[in-house]
Figure 1 (cartoon, rainbow over the protein chains, first blue to last red):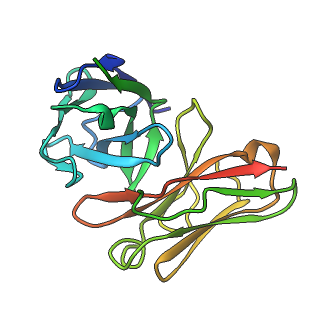
Figure 2 (figure 1 turned 180 degrees about the vertical axis):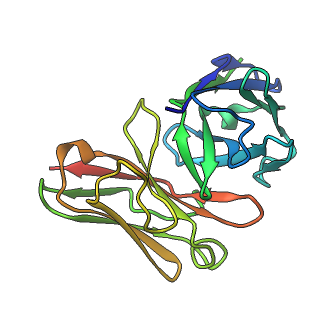
Length: 118
Length: 110
């Protein structure tokens, strides 16, 4: 059974870079059938798509976040990562990683709360 | 403000049916047949319950069904059970490898 688990600092200072890693077990991120992505949910708000990546290296980002977001992949560790630069309080959210198939997201990780505060 | 509009809450008694709407635009729901619905119990991983408007993933009860008309998609949960109480989010592919989501609907089983 495919499982995803997010990890990374729970507190990031304003203007710094948020970095998270998603570890995948029970399947390979090098599969040709799937993309791998990040989403987030600010407190009290709805979900927001951040971006996706294909094992070949192709990346796709939400236009509203594109200038600050980087998604990368380490196939040797079966992990993919997210970086968001120049964070502000508006980037405080629960961050989720997920696999993309049939243009939907399934499965998801449990999520990790990242708070931006000095 | 979310790109897709959902009612903030919905409710029904056990055994009843509840329908949750999700309104988008001609740039997302109205164009692409890639509407999906997610069930989220707080503190747990969101779970896909409907994809491609009306398809159910393996293991999802047939009490869950989806449909689309114009720019609006709908999720119907029939034969409500206590375990169905959760937050539900709709999503639509919006082209160019971009997705939009709704603000979520809290479903209460009375």
